[in-house]
Length: 215
Image (cartoon, rainbow, N blue to C red; front, side):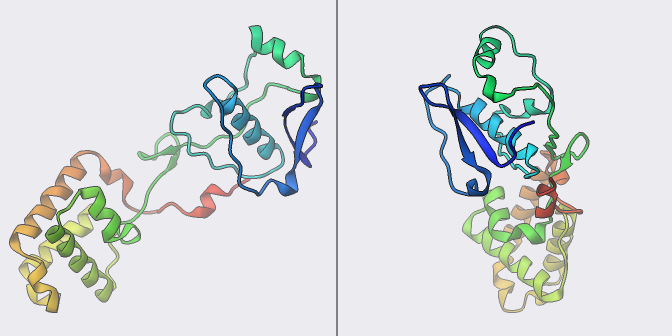
């Protein structure tokens, strides 16, 4: 069984293992090196050891290099020779519990949020709005906040924009921001986003930080 009180990171020139105390592993770290020097394997090893110690690991695995942790390995060739040269590693191939994010929510943990949680600034960047369109979006969110309206998905926002276009008096002093051109442009942008499959990203249940911290 691995020593759960320390993270074995490698070996020195004499072949003796180098370890990091688990209780001191909450520091910042940097894994750097040229291609093929073992950065990914080092990260995999760290994730495995944290998992063995009952620590939840969140990895932004953009290239998909780490998801192989979910299946037991079958070392062969030079890799098997390298492992055999490190008996202190106590390496035993095994699968680790892995949960992947899935925007569609079909084969992994659903990655969802609500428009109210995203807010107008981030949504405006996503839609690549002009200044006037961004102002109109802020005005719409301001009304939603004032009226206690929860914007869950794109349909909610489109319905609110339609209501404000028909009832500009609801906007009060911000009525000038919601021009016909800005409103129509916003609806077109939202329709484009919807056609690209973004509807699956918005709604409830929204992602909770607790979902990422399950050991």
